[in-house]
Length: 327
Image (cartoon, rainbow, N blue to C red; front, top):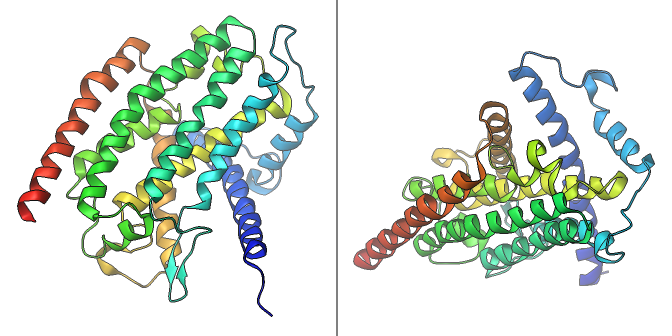
């Protein structure tokens, strides 16, 4: 008996959702453990063996906390904003390929214009942050949401231009096609400048240190989610970590060969190579947060507009010229 297509997609989505949620939970635990190791402290070690049940304890705590809302908040948008951030964060995994085999690509949907759709979905996520800060009816969350919008615009331009160079070299916008084009040479070598720009802009896009001016507690209390508590605050928290996983997946697919091993090595399954590369980027995120101080906001914006954007534009022009001449 052949199962209907909608049922197969439903099963794939449920399995992938479980994997992503579990990955988020233990990525958060890994961050606290790695930061503890770097700062010479133990990290979570009380709940379960080696603190492995700490994510479950945090989830129970958030669900049981009282859900408060300011009187001045917009009743609809205030409650809708966390779900917008969460929905867009999870939606991109419908088109991200995790590996390949003789039966095809390991993805819910293998979209030809995968990169373009990916950028379109992730750009919608800013509405959750913007609406959450504005709908709270408070000044500090509003400042945090305005900062987030300005930061997203300035850094997403450079990010988009850095990815266009990869598309020119690969000759396709399909994520699986870009990975297959890296069989002989990973793109982070010919597109090393674009790789650096992407890594920096990805950190800024996800509002992580040293670019976490959106949540700067010294001047904004906690930023756009100051007036959120309980499970609604947890949804913003989940969306941030899932976005970290997303940009790590994109970096692995577009610059590090995805599921293709280094030097053509095949002694590990393709999905293991892919997960190792994603894990490396997650570790890099944590390393930056533990090491670098926060930028000043005017320097953050100047770096995006005056340094990253011109560098990404120049790299795109040089890439296009080289490909045209070689063609």
